[in-house]
Every structure is written in structure tokens, then in C-alpha cells.
Length: 115
Length: 110
Image 1 (cartoon, rainbow over the protein chains, first blue to last red):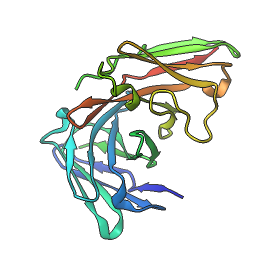
Image 2 (image 1 turned 180 degrees about the vertical axis):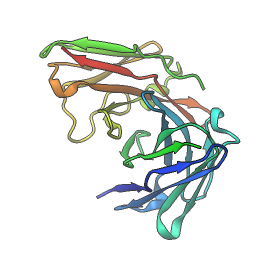
Image 3 (image 1 turned 45 degrees about the vertical axis):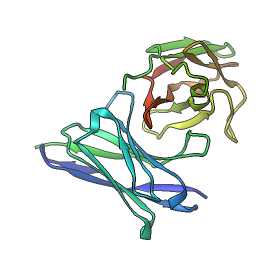
């Protein structure tokens, strides 16, 4: 079955970057785009961008341009999202289906910013 | 990209129907098919409830339905049940290979 398993919770200092991973299994990794979504505490979902695991091509939301980098390692079916932000939030990865919906989601990774 | 506009909260009693709107969907003909809806319970990942504006993924109850009028997509939940209490988000293509979520609606089952 399709699974997206994300890396564990992180605590980072203000100004530092954090890299979250999203390991895919149960399907051909290069066949589906991976999206990243942010959710600050008590807030809504915010679309960050996507990566095409086949080509490595990316597209970022305007709010995150210059702050986020999405990459992938096809040899281990894993997508990465590196962010330089001082916002505490949960970050999700999700697979884009052929019908353009996000049916499969990772469990979320909490990134806490604390000095 | 501006977030799509949803009501902050809606409520209904068990057995009733409620509708959540999502305004700001692109008006070009193809964009409605790029609207999906998600349910999120506290501390959980979002769950896909409707795709292509009005279709159900396998395993989702047909008490959930989607529709469109003008630049507004809507999610209707009929026969409200206690377990429907959650946050709901719409998601749509926003042009230039970007996507956008609605601000989210908190559904309370009274």
C-alpha cells in the first residue's frame, strides 16, 4: 500500500534551517509529484510547493520563494524539504494523484523553533 | 496566491445538512475539476473527501457531496454525525503551476 513516512520532530534555533524527509513506498516514486504543506499551530493549511521526483523540477508558492528548497533522492524514494523559517509548524508531504488531488499524506513533522 | 475564502465556522445538529462554501475558484472551465476537499481531525493529517469538485474517493461516505456555482465550490454534508466534527479545507489550482488552500472551516456538531 502507498505510504509516505516523514522524519521525526525537530527543534531548531532561530535562523537555522531544517530539512524534513518524506520516504515513499508502495508505488513508483518517480511517477507522482510530491507537495509540501505547512500548518502553524491552530491555523489552516498552507501550500508550499511541489517537486517532480522524476525530473527534480520544483515550483514554490510565492510566500516561500527564497526560503524553501525541495529536493529528492530517487535511489531511496525520498523527498526532502529544507526551510529557513522561524515559524513553529507541522509540515506535511502529500502525493498528487492523476486527478490533481492529494490522497496520500505523510504523518506530519513538527518543527519547533526555540532559542 | 491569495487563500480561497471559506466561512470560519459552521454548525449543525445530528441528522441535519450543512454546506461549506469556498470562494475564489478560477472561472476558467477546467479549474472546477481541480477542486478537492479535505477533512482534518485535531492532531491528524488531512483526509481527502472529494476530488474533481464532486467525486468520492474509495471509502468516503456519499453523505459528502461537492458542487459549484460561479466561482464558488461547495461541500455539503448530509445526515450529520458526531464524527463529522472536524476542520474542512478546499484546495484548488491557482494558475502558473501553483495551488492554494482555503482558510478552513471548523464544523461543530451540536
